[in-house]
Length: 273
Image 1 (cartoon, one colour):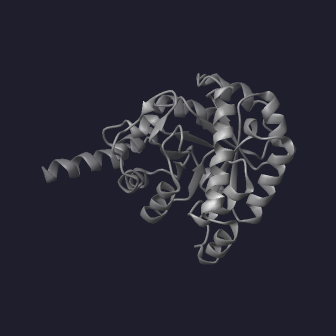
Image 2: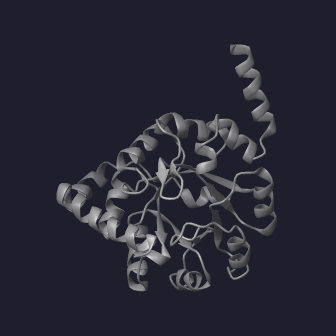
């Protein structure tokens, strides 16, 4: 099986296991105590290029990203640095994430939160909402057309925004069939984990006006983000570059070109030493 097929198969198995541990009716009950959703989609279309800062523990291609990193400290640093939204990777088998990470991020930050996982079962929508997500990732290559349409509709009924992710022209066409509001263009091929940032440039020309576009994977420098803004991308999702940074708060500020805030941060640090 390809890497994506393995990840999807694992996601289906894990969803079945968690459904046995926490029945769907329990999740439905918990939704009654859910706080108001934070507008994820709106955070992406504010003036300038919005930054979605991701918390991830490891990946199949890079291994451990930042051993011992804490969710609360990291997402607070992202928020102070000027991130528009958070992405929390919850896949367990290959990425080491969990729903606990999602809940911890919700408690620590006021930013809207995307649950990043391989969502293939409606049960995952309910557990996303019940555990603090404001939006979910739907990977077009991970599901059939009928599953994609059903998951998208049910997510919206649960007041969850959707980032609908594509990697090639065929997947973009499928995403447009469900009239997705926010399209994610992943520069990473999930079959072999190679990255080509030209993927965003190539697919962007086929995106109709009125759709918000998020570019994902392969970015670590402000100059790259300047180019994304120039060609009309609304937001960028960055994980490993921020997780590996010595000071994630400063890394976010530098990527968003908030030079004044970065300078103030260093002056404050110097006064404390």
